[in-house]
Length: 201
Image (cartoon, rainbow, N blue to C red; front, side, top):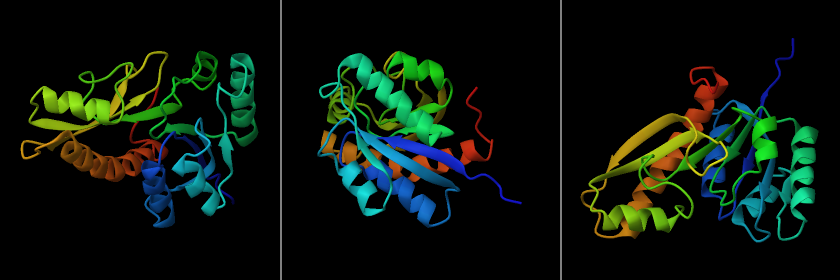
């Protein structure tokens, strides 16, 4: 009997290091799923390049290219075509359209490079987060994985892991430590969702 394999898609804007960590998890057998496509709002994103090298369908969709409504329709069409069980945001810098969030409610997750609800919200991504954490003199940071809703970083938190940053002398050192943690944690949490150990609804 064929058991249907769990299907995920990944949205990414940048170099795609979390996408690579997810692909590594799949290839090493730690992550029991299939990546059905990768989407980026950035045509020169490293994530698209990684996907193409692995023969994963890779799409560039951006509101800059499409009219807003056409962008949403195209994105929904893409999702309906590939039918993912889970949408994984991995360094995706745009707000997911409300129409997509409603249609795929409790099936979209994001990873944030700090311990929400601190250091979250509009504009709080990448080095902006680590600069804020460093300026605040925090001794601990970490990663948060949450369900995506209509507001930046406000969805239900499903997993957090802390890391000691008391020895970090710069925001860049914090970023390096936190990114390593992201690469470890994200595939683990996706696998727990697949196994039903973490519930999204």
